Image 1 (cartoon, rainbow, N blue to C red):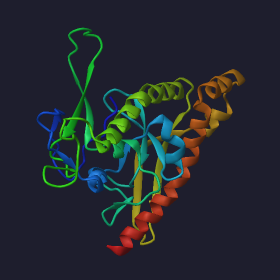
Image 2: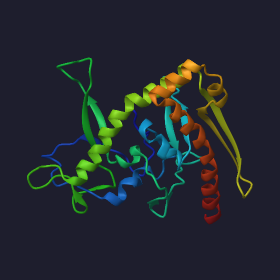
Image 3: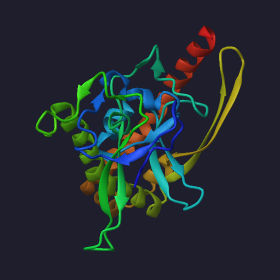
Image 4: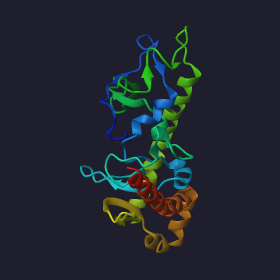
Length: 252
């Protein structure tokens, strides 16, 4: 599963959502994005690459244990920094799916019927600042039925699950075609503070230019070629991050 690494403003407590136990649970919609207030990066899903690229840099990172690559949206230039979170609000035109699905998570439990296939379970973070028993929008009505607020959040989770295999397949093709290259940033802020951002990867423009006609056609047929361009062009949004960083440093 593609999950956000926890670097949060609270200690999470994940439990399976139970309509009987959580019937009176409410969601504070205006606090959903607070989960990511101190996260510098979150997973990016294939279907949202174009919208993400218009607002954020999309980068690749490599799992140090598995060696697998994932696509991520970059929020900050340092650990625990989200430059798009300011004045208790998300400051971008588009909010990533992995942010909007909070405080819901997907867990897994053994599937006795088909052991080889995991059984997905919808979970909530009981310690989430977006959940309350006193204030906010109810998740279930008096009859135990899902409310519109719950359905909207569940739809985001469903979209992520649907998107995940496509996202993984896209990254697999990037690896197979040698289209990933390291991206190291040496940044000097307006106050002359120096920042180094390492461990990130991006699309190789040289690799794209060297693809054979059949490979380009294959990527185009899958819709992956336009995704490559979206990721490549999104690197320009690094300048947006630098501008936001300069403003934050100046105001601190």
